[in-house]
Length: 132
Image 1 (spheres, helix red, strand yellow):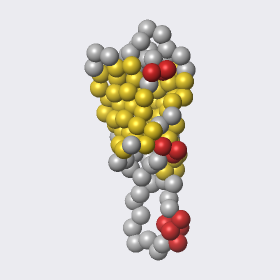
Image 2: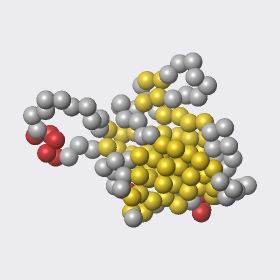
Image 3: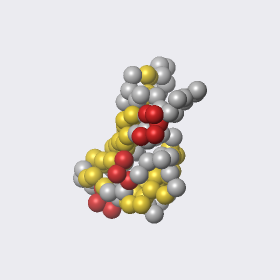
Image 4: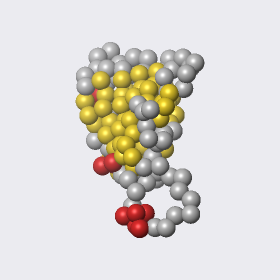
């Protein structure tokens, strides 16, 4: 079972897994496993690799980032504004530790893909996100 946590002021009660929001920002993601690794696919529209940070410690992975408004957004006279901006953090606990040294992340067309090889041992590591 994969456990996931999001930091923020709002939490849904009565669920087996803690889920919440941070400043209204939620990053949707899928996680699947194959024989060799876990693969996380997250939708991160408008974000660049430098806007994201990924940390791994044992069986826990944390995805952090910030969605910033463009400078012209500050000068616009809005009739409707639904897009949210600000920092977000999402932490996932996988069923077993992963090999942080061999983890890979890429960002293409607003989709972040993180491949986490399975292993018996895991060490904390921050990984760099490449742009395709």
